Image (cartoon, rainbow, N blue to C red; front, side):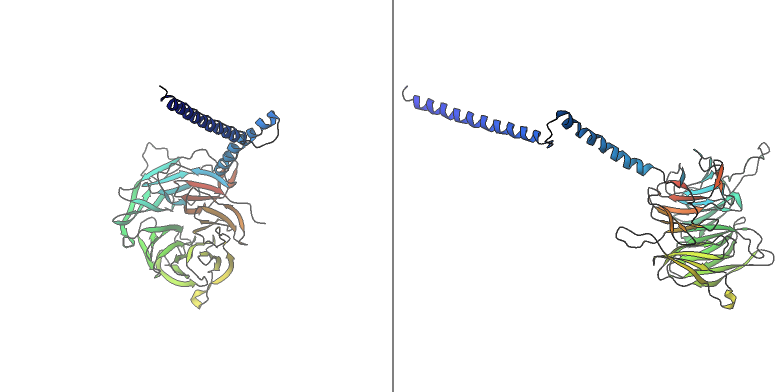
Length: 435
């Protein structure tokens, strides 16, 4: 028994030491936790009311800050009038009717929609839906003659097609006083045009220059190098030109139907004249001048409302206004009237180029886009009148001013329409007139 006493004593001593170490560790851990809790609010103010009330404004201010940012992103730009929703995919093109009261949109969901713009501030817009033949998606759209006929380009695996939709024959029971809307009846069609290449732009105009008979003309521009002029009503091909510049960026026709101009791979812009016969029909399309002055590729161009000037945007960072009302048949060259630096830069300060341009029908405002950014400039001075940095939730795919003012409440306003990959079309007001 005496032999066991040292063993028992040693065991008790060892247990006591272990217990002491355990409780010492536990005590220090609890002390550390108390310190960490005490240091959460380092405010030395002993007033318990002040101490507890100070974090509350911070907790409230953070959500307010985030909601403010969210509200700011949702808040309409001062020139943002309305949004046309209901598209199921990317909106690839748009076009106003000659009276400005109808807006046609081409959408990658295979449909063309024609919106009635009875009031730009309306909460909802009536629209007519046109389903294209299966297998293709519309890439561009343009009105022909009036609001009752529309030309649509469609691209598929087999190539590019053109369709002209006109209104159906009215039934005897229909009210003839109703406003006509384009209905899905194909009046003419062409397939595998432009050597199966996609049509990237399509613009229409009424032939009013010289002896022209007033017919609607449509200029379609392919992603290749060719441009075709069409008779809007009959679908007849009236002329075919080639830019011979590797690839086209776009092409358009002057408002009076006299000129076609193309922006392509090079810095020079080619201009063709549509020559009319005495009976008003198109006789030929001939190359008459080139606009030389840019140092890099021209990305977009547009004609002035009077068809006597062209505005070009280039990757060289400049805008140019050209006078094309010259006696080219006497070797008089077009003249550069104005040169403006493009007032758009990225975060590093590098000048950006404009993707698209559109001039207002009064000739005062130039709308220009880059990505999702939209700017309004003074044609007279080149100064920026307003900017919407995030005009859409994605790149802008098309842009156009309405040819005439449309109602907005009790007044009438000029309206700019923009289409985007975000499946929306937006309507914008013109900025305040430059002083």
